[in-house]
Image 1 (cartoon, helix red, strand yellow):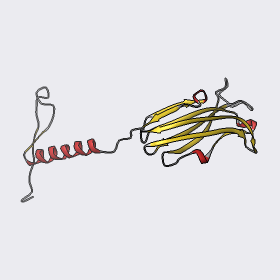
Image 2: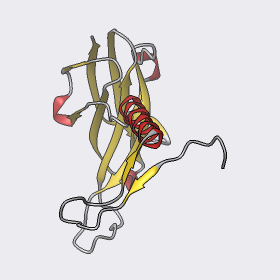
Image 3: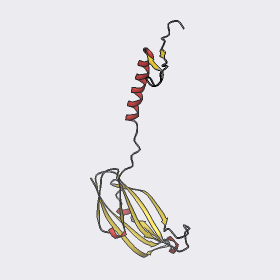
Length: 162
């Protein structure tokens, strides 16, 4: 083609001295430029970095937890929903501008046959995200779902977000 830049490719007959084709001229400059751009873009791309997670359990009731913004607090509390009881968040205690509930899940205890056994217990796992600097006291109550006056316990903790 007339006017089109050409790349000269040298092939080596002695592979022990040269591992393969060698690009020279404008093609090598273009290839090196593309490689440099790919490296820069790859280095600046988004990171799938999980935020730090701190965990507390029922034994930690009344404690204070210190978090940084975007950190996660995981609260693990013994539970047995087959009894009709479950952990409930006292909504009026939650300051959603400081921490927010991300999720609440039940995880059944492992059994020898790896199958849930009717009536066996497990753990409720609540996850909270630190939203902004501040302090929030969070209260939870373990009560019979159909009758909140039948309480089976409570759990309170304070989160300080720095």
